[in-house]
Length: 375
Image 1 (tube, rainbow, N blue to C red):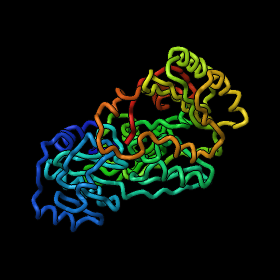
Image 2 (cartoon, rainbow, N blue to C red):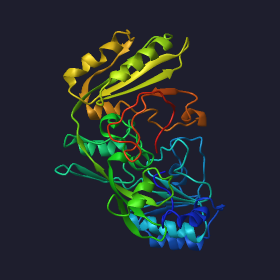
Image 3 (tube, rainbow, N blue to C red):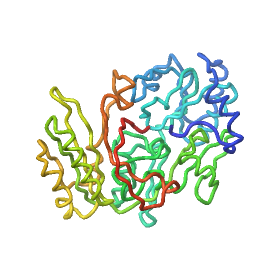
Image 4 (cartoon, helix red, strand yellow):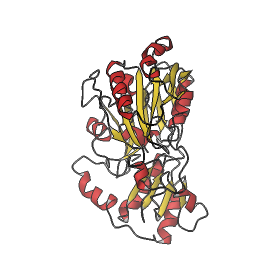
């Protein structure tokens, strides 16, 4: 979901979408066609049998063991356009890979064309305007490291190895979302390659229908190659985890509910039920991006519940982000249920949806069971 396949207009795209994304695919592609593709791009084309093929087709969730006919490792926007043209001409399925972290394996397809953007990682920051521009292969860590040099940040997920493109186009939850909104709320513009090879900008002022579409319109409107974000001042935060003894779940969740009801927007809190040899344990992850001097008073009710382990302390935002990766390494063996929330139930505060759906500043506290990972 680093933004997959076609845009002409939301209506005109539908027949093309059926052919490209839902097409039958094939096990092999004519060698002459492959040679022509190789000659036309600046990046790399990887096909079955190549030394790099096995590693190039791996995604984070290895429950999805897919074998594409062609992997196009793009070196720039023209490569994306040529890969789309190649797939459309042969009615091949298309997958777009950014960080390769999709829990549903959207970054890889069977028998089709993978447009691999993972080599496009440049991040530029205009500190004066508080704006960052990230290529679609950049990871959360790339964006965070670039923006934090200037004491700035944007909502960018809580796992450093997630790709920013798929994260943003999927909504984009993160530690700063209660204060500054989701990643898609902070998206100022995006560069999109259409199915006919055109490069267009999507923003509130340019192609606004497309800008709406890529921020929750269902996907499959184009291949996003770069994203521009609004940044915010973020310095030290108070972050860490509180781990409680087995049992007491009902008592702890009731207390957590009361805590959320009075928490300010600067407080991000996530509760997880973790299995143990006895009974489930509750872990609460916290990140407070306000004045650190106020954090102890805010967290006192949770500490009064006597956690067995308390790692909450003042740290840099980068340190907080690097500590938050859930299963940061690829899994050699996994089950789909691991990523669908049946193995680990996460209970989190439900934060405001994108600003297009709800007025900024509207608040609601509730629980949501989730096991989702962004791309």
